[in-house]
Amino acid sequence: MSIVELSDDEIRGVAEPLWNDLVKCSNEGKYGEFVKNFSSSLALAMNQVVVGHQFANSTLARNLSEGAEFLGIIRRGDHVTVLFRQRSSKMPGEWLGRLVLGHEDGKVRIFGASIF
Image 1 (cartoon, one colour):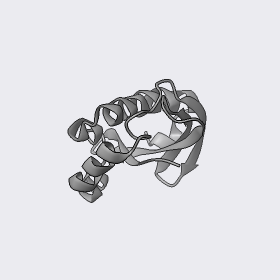
Image 2: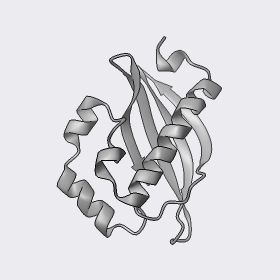
Image 3: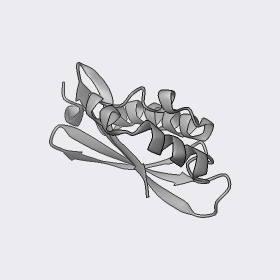
Image 4: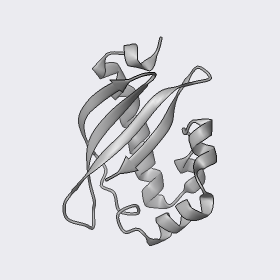
């Protein structure tokens, strides 16, 4: 079954643990753990030096609050985009978290992840 065919609750049940894991690994600066659920194409596109620099120099990337608020799901093609309201433990304000999920080799993988 394609991920776009799952119910919102089923997608949320998959997405939230993946997002929470990204937040944890980002806060800890663990690049290897951060990319473990990425699709092969996204993992290849990530430059370890650039990401390591981001982890080392971004106050936001190293201080994300746990418990992001689920906002909704957008289905497009073979992927879903899951949106979260993300906060920081050190910076005031709110950010939009975006997690793009799809299937690769029979598993749900992350095809995109960002915070705006």
